[in-house]
Length: 190
Image (cartoon, rainbow, N blue to C red; front, side):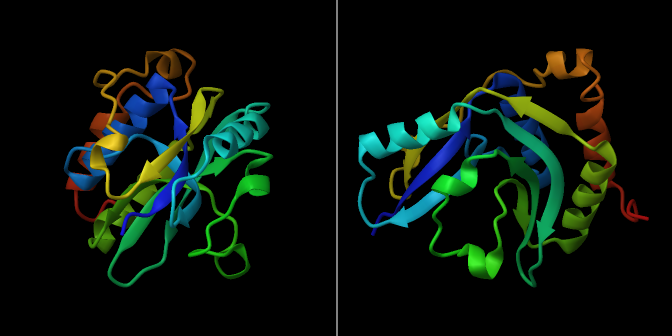
């Protein structure tokens, strides 16, 4: 049975390009989804459009900030993520499979999800050293249905297109090549 979710989808082309490229390097495969934060769900049925508009109205008064990284502990699956901050996100947060009382409030964008603990540790180490802090007003609240793969197509905004971040000294121009080298080199983590 299909499950319905609500995503906070980042539409900023530079953040999408940077994060998608980092995901592709981390996973050694093309990214299969746009940059998003799952903010509600799962639901057993479609979410009414007026709810989506209300959530977007609540969130539209402040930007999203991507600041910090972390890793969810796991024995078989390792998840490395960027932390997401927004002052009103908790007001609309509802994830019954991951209640705040048990898992805490941890909005994030997944960068790597896989079975290789060494790769996850090297990615986390690299990102901690980079200290990325990105801010954007470009986002939408969108529905996602698990049974409809084409409902959320990946937007290809050009490869390595984050020049404004480079020019503002927020990201080093060679970040992707350094990330690739870090993930290919064993014993990189000190």
